Image (cartoon, rainbow, N blue to C red; front, side):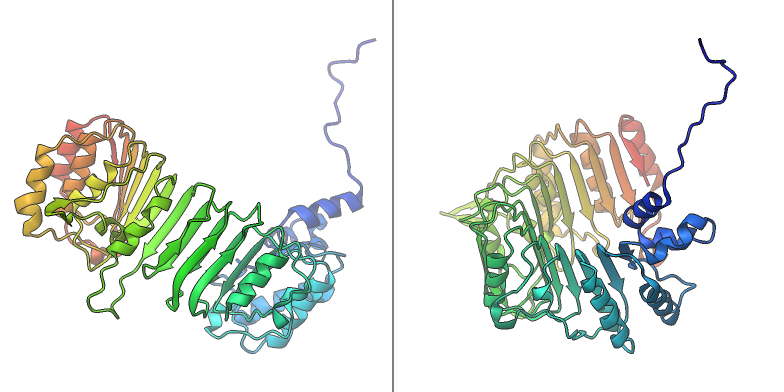
Length: 445
């Protein structure tokens, strides 16, 4: 017998209370719970049972430091959950060191897996009386402006660690060796502004999961030696240094090379060191770099002839270049490099801190050379100029891509937010001319 079509069907099933609590405590971050606990009875107890205590975004214009500390303190004092999977704290620790220590110890007693402590707001390194290297359950450890030590370079824990990120810590070669020897599941290492002298050696020969290495602002490190067969992502910021990639078997897929100018060496030319490492970068899919990288491709005398170094980037799909002073690069250098990237699809030109000022070399030689050459970019689909100020050479770059990138469908011009940095008024006549000549390209300002 068929049921009546007018009979109401019950669409939801009421879940047991303990199951609801489990779902909320494991699936909802603490910020979401705090925002909704006043409108739902279900969420009122959730904050003190939550396993995801991410306070990274708890600051706002309405909350003072003391209010933030009070909220966190109340949650920890009342926390009833048996476990805390994740704790993220971004705080000025000065004056509340005892509370921070108490919170971290509570997390340790509840099998913390992911721990992030960021005290950069205070601009003073916090010395917590905790041996992080002895924690057994950690898979992710990120310490910024917080001390990290390994007593006798022999970790008692960290066997499950996958990610380690340190900022403003003292690092020694023995410490790095101890980490790779002990952490068999290690995947990513990030060192930022850490104190270390001499050579940095990454001995990850027996690791099958180590994929990413990030090194930012470590000026006293003179050389990098990588024995990391599975490395796929390498990010670096600082002076140009020699890097030994001879024992990296896997092809790098993503590289960031944010080279900065070294003003301490008066006659320092980094081009040779840039080129020495170039072979390791030719297979990447994503490349982010600065004008120092591009300047290494400038023409030079070789056996009595002017030649440019030639490297093919056949796998490159996305190219991001940031220009900063001092800088002699022009559209010519950008175009000549992209000729070596036949499959690139996205190009980002960052000039937020730079204005092109081409000199006589551009006017007399480079411009005429470009006009005599046949540039064809068949794969470029999107170009972004970030920091666009309507300078005449920026308009040259815009017109060049519209005319020579046959597959281009989007050209985005992002102007500086600060009105004072907008050096010129928009040349609507020239923009309209470009739009009419290349109707297939969407020009956004």
